[in-house]
Amino acid sequence: MGTRSRRMLAIALLVLAGVLVPVVVVATWTARTVTDTDAFVSRVAPVASEPEVQALVSQQLADQVTGAVIDDRVAPRVGEAIDELAAPELVKGLLRDVAASLGGAVEARVQKVADTIVTSPEFRSAFDTALDEAHAELVATLEGDAPQGTVITEGTTVSISLATIAGAVRAELVNSGYTFVDRLPQLEATVPIGTVEQLEKWQGYYSLLKVMVWLGPLLVVVLLGTGAWLLRDAAMSALWFAGSAFLALIAVTVGVRAVVGSATSDIADPLAADAARAIVATLTATLVRNATVVGLLLVITLAAASYVAARRRLTPTPAS
Image (cartoon, rainbow, N blue to C red; front, top):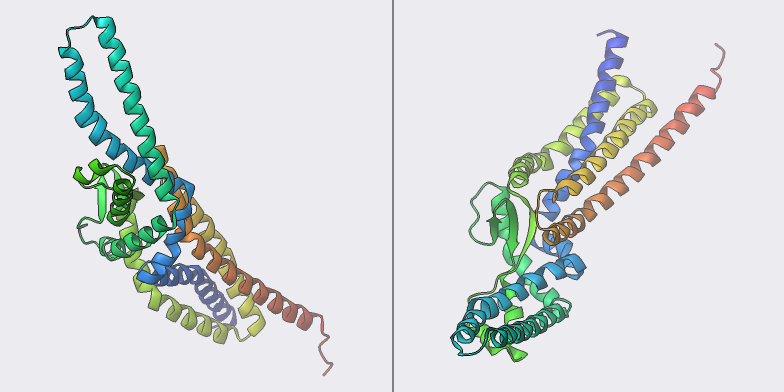
């Protein structure tokens, strides 16, 4: 192999090793965060304090209670009773207005109780428990298994069911004097994580990233070592490797931000979309931090290699 061909092959291997660095970063983050229950809960748990998530869960539960009590049970009976009254239509109309205002007062009270609950420490504790219960099924879903109840599909939206939280809210409503809640069907709270189409894409990425967890670092080491051996110039090898890795890391970071931005674009409900964005952003925050640390290490490597290469070039060659 000629000198030129050897150099070109070495550079190609070093660049390829650098391009794989951000892939390894993402794969490692996936293995440590998504597949490990404790890590997943610790990463996602902070979203329980996000206003968007609290507003979504509060609205869901309040709507279920008021819908079941007022719309499904009270309103029809009150309406029928008013219709049966032997009174002028004007009086009936006034009675309907009074009934509506009373229903509104009950709805406001239930909403207030729900708002109080989702901002309490008990809500965050219940949220952690719900995440712990949901994690195993979420991983199974990413691996291609059919959801069993915790990961649910509503139309085109994929959500995680938070049964533990619904139970906590139900108990608090009963303790607050709303004993009728105990006779209602099971309350349900869910937080969206994306769409069905996006879940299918995540399943493909997840399978690839699981392989790259062990294959990626191995390829980086082999390609870097081979490229450096062929080039036989440590400073230039470091420049080619760190430079390509840094550029690839920037590209992947931009791509991740774009994915996060579009992850909830197809969720029709604005409140649910806001909550999903908060969840995805919180989950990927550690990935961004990891990428930042790797980026700083690459910049340091680039600076050191550039210094050595420049100093060597400026050092005069001893006369023979």
